Amino acid sequence: MTPAVPTGPRDATGPIPPDADPSSPVARFLRVFTAPVLLFQELSRHPRTLGALVLGAFLTALSTLLIPLELFEAGLREQLMAAGQELPDDLGLAARVGWVVTIFSSAVVWPILALISAGLFALVFLFIFGYEGSFRVLLSITAHALLVAAVGSVLVVPLKILAGDPTISLTP
Image: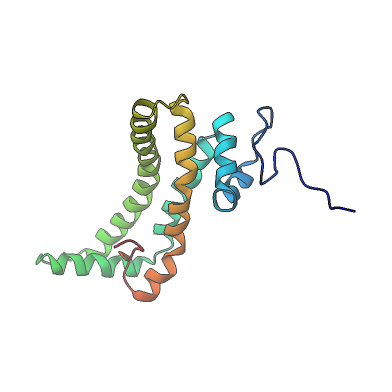
């Protein structure tokens, strides 16, 4: 007797039927890493953007929030000294303000980054290659694809803490 082969919208080898419902936000997040092609097929039929944008903004803000304030202050001190500037008397206050501003600005910049990236993809795919999809679909796919970088920003935090350098990244 041969084993049953899975079929239907969650089959990893076939296309998703047009009438399939989009997966839950948690399932979409997991599919970014486990089955991105299937996820992007699903998003081309049922674009879902808001959850991915909010999660990406949260993860990037969390990556700054997890950095100890003392480490953030040490990084600020090193930057000021490297630039040949005097250290202010209230460096601790400046570090706290900078830390909070960085947390909130990363959450605000994340959706803007997704919009700009989707706009660039629209220029390339919609106009140059004649893609017949919509900007909404490209934004949804971009927002989900950028979650890889958002997760990476959280995963690199222990390395930043161990190295004592809040500016470390995995890119050159």
